[in-house]
Image (tube, rainbow, N blue to C red):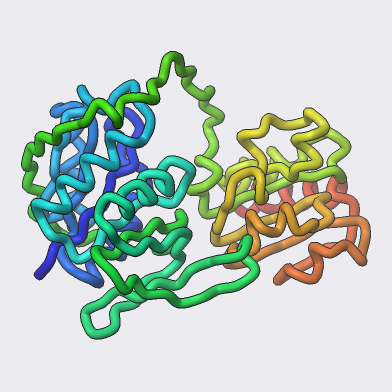
Length: 320
């Protein structure tokens, strides 16, 4: 059975949930092999978690030559590993960095590229991808016709399922060209922890817009009751009520959670592009003619400052 390479998305060695989703999807096509770029100690520790989700091999790539640079060195690592293993496909988490790595890799391998995939099927041994395209307005099925199929998957495209894998750690030494080191990171600042799930990975997202009037307490209260991430519309971000890192939309982050709760958000196309692939959508808005109601599974016409505290109280009561 052919290998399927999965680039591990991790923070200081801690494997993030979207990687486990990719390993689950990869098992439909072949034997998942994780590609871990980091220190040897981190790779060995991560291998225990990766093999629990079916990783047969963990290619450990020392990050001494990739650390401090942008994405070009990582694309070279994957290209050299692909030449060695001839994989059935290469899967990467869809995000700003992941999509750039995938694009560079596709050029190096002369392969077709699928971005923002949300599902996978196998037809005659070849992968068939379901894609969200044109700002999430259409869903299409696509195949790669040339080279090694390369695909980036949106977080929450699959439920991670455990499966025993060997998890054999194999060091892999890549040769990074000088050209790949032309863009260097000169400073970085860790993001402050909020105690809530990462926005793009969360199973539930509670967002607020112009209708909050700048008061996000009801949004945060409901999010904490549901164990959800907090999001914001562009209007809320442009007004300075929330940082840009919370923005959901075409010029912000794209999310695809199991449940998306939009509060005080009119539903402009800019925002819809970032969340309309959510599995279930709920909206709370005072304007019964707000465009967001065209998209939702459940809608509440009412003031979020009244509705959300009541919902939060009831949720906490039932949890207790």
